[in-house]
Structure formats: structure tokens, C-alpha cells
Amino acid sequence: MMKVLAQNKKATFDYEVLEEFVAGIVLTGPEIKSVRAGHVTLKGSYVSVLGNQAWVKGMNIARYPYDSSPGYEPFRDRKLLLNKKEIEKISKSLKTKGCTVASLAIGLEGSYAKLQIGIVRGRKKEDKRAVIKDRENKRTVDRAIRAFRG
Image (cartoon, rainbow, N blue to C red; front, side):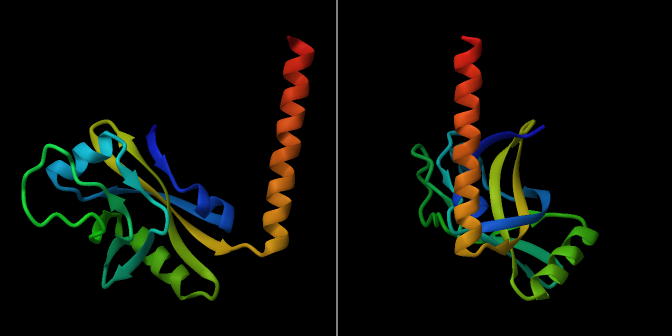
């Protein structure tokens, strides 16, 4: 069970998630400390496959405040740890029209940082409106249930 530290809410709104994976992520010492402190932004990040390796691009991990090493780059590409079948499935889906792989959430599983990624397809404006309508209906139903019980 992964303890979620940051989510990419924009991705779940803009895209329809077709399939999800949980991948390990290769980080340096100060980066993992910064992730544990919650200084990570997933907005605009995506996954690409180069050769037989998966990389996350556009993920922002802020500099750890107590790190004094020079030349830190918060937006550098970071390697994902996936097995061969998962990488093949992801690269196959990237070749299909309209599909991409976005990072959905980052969290801790034990002492390891894990990135939840998903094969996603873009939503049209009408679909986004339907998502908003469903969410608002669910909220009103939940409020009515709470008011009835309390």
C-alpha cells in the first residue's frame, strides 16, 4: 500500500485512465528527502520509453533546503524501474493514436519512492463537463446523507 505524497489531479481530469502501473523511481539522497517532505510537483510530467528503459520527464522535485551540492536540476529526467513486460506494454501503447503515459501520483512504499503512472487517453470538452457534473452530484448526495444521519 502506497502512502501518497502528491497527486496529479490535472491529469485525472484531462485524461481518461486506461491502465495503471506502479514504478520505482531512481532518486539521489537529497531528492528522496525532498520528496518525503512533499516538495514535488507532477503537473505536466509524462513518461517516455527510450530503448528498453522508461524515463519520467517534467517532474519537479524542489531542491532540498539543507543540500549544498552545486548544479542541482529540479526538472531532470529520472529513470523508472519497471519490468520488461510493463515497458513493452507502455511502449506499445505510446505508438497507438491518442494515447500517452502520464504520472498520476508519487508516494512512499516502505522506504522506497514509487510513482503511479497510467496509460491515458485525452478527454473531450463534453466528457470533462460530465465528470464535473458527476462529481457535484456525488457531493450533494454525500451532504444529504450526512445531514440525514446527523
